[in-house]
Length: 247
Length: 309
Ligand SMILES: Nc1ncnc2c1ncn2[C@@H]1O[C@H](COP(=O)(O)OP(=O)(O)OP(=O)(O)O)[C@@H](O)[C@H]1O
Ligand SMILES: [Mg+2]
Figure 1 (cartoon, rainbow over the protein chains, first blue to last red):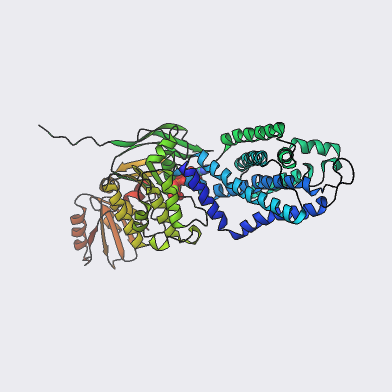
Figure 2 (cartoon, rainbow over the protein chains, first blue to last red):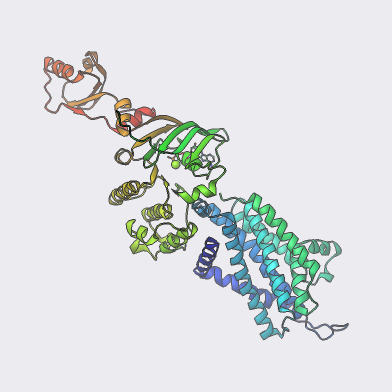
């Protein structure tokens, strides 16, 4: 456990020592909100039960999910593959660092970076776009942590099966873009062709978004969605633990 | 009654180690033992299988065949338990670019509680002035010293050093040798891979010479020289045109000429025989002398690269 916390704290310090990486990591959620929100979220619902409600309110949980996905699909696999390529993982392993400590520390750091990103989006949403505050904070946090868990597990899996940092970057970006467009986090789901909608609903981002949306809008905990997210994470973690490579 | 020294405790026992990469046999049926408190050297040309061998012992590579016992553990099955008790400086590894020297020592000492005070190691390995420098900014030799310090930070029972002094300046090498001797004197066993003959000769109690994955000899440095370096080597300079007749003298094995310099190898009373024959032929060199065979001679002979030019 000591090794895990020490590693996590060291990783956070190292992250802060790379100003460009840090600025981009935190500028990214803001850009997502400003650009995607500017395109799709500025409208107001005209009729129906939600008449008069700003679309932005519905998009913010999705943007938070997008940031979590970008950490799991891109940042984490690139980081781990980079460590492996350069022999950092070899060095840690030779000094007796257990796999759970290494991966636990990475998951914790992902959670922290995701949290800052999420808070930035929410804060800017409140201040600049009049987004209403989440209704059920407890449920929201649970959904957030599960979402980070699922995408971290996917990230470790990607890092293990892809040969190097460059391929991790390419594959991660591709997956993220696909999810961005078909999971309802950019264009609303109902404008997508039927098959695309089906693909979107099969991808984890959709479920992370849904599980965040429920408590945020006050519809209560989305138990089914949470279970799906958990199952995806558990499955990915199980496979990742088997295929994880130190070198 | 005869008093016998206690049998040395064996801390590493390897029997029939085989490691294959595709169609390269990296380690071919290697067997050896290392006793507690020994400094055991591994010598051999590039690609001989030294790194593969020591990394199999540390559980970093999995051998195809053979039995390995390190401190009572099989590194293939109990790697985690074993790694708490050993330390390794790897030939190839790195730290994150922005990690500082003190952070690395502090971090690695937290992995296995109850080790050394890393501040002492930082001072001993002359890293004090670089304590806040990032890994990225360290010179090759400074990185190397940091890796050795990291290998020692858990106060290991066995430390594996894979080309520890590569990239160190002469003063730093001497310092490293001193420190390695100290570590050994405190009871740590040292397995040392090196390409430096002087290092192996001065530091090692025993040396295994590897070639093409096989261990071709294991002995003390002295033993290797006595058994595998050519016998006596006589050298002198002369202006005489033809000295090939020396080859016909009894006890002479070979004669070589490089410009004015002549080298004669032989055995037994070769020195007096050659000296007498030279005088007979009217050659009276002032610089006739015997050259001591070195570990390098033995090494070159063993690895099949014995050529004196
Ligand atoms: N991961 C690997 N994949 C394929 N072949 C390998 C691998 N590691 C080592 N080899 C091969 O195994 C042989 C032994 O390599 P090893 O690194 O053990 O040599 P070495 O004695 O340490 O050499 P050097 O003095 O150059 O460090 C070489 O032929 C090398 O090409
Ligand atoms: Mg080597």
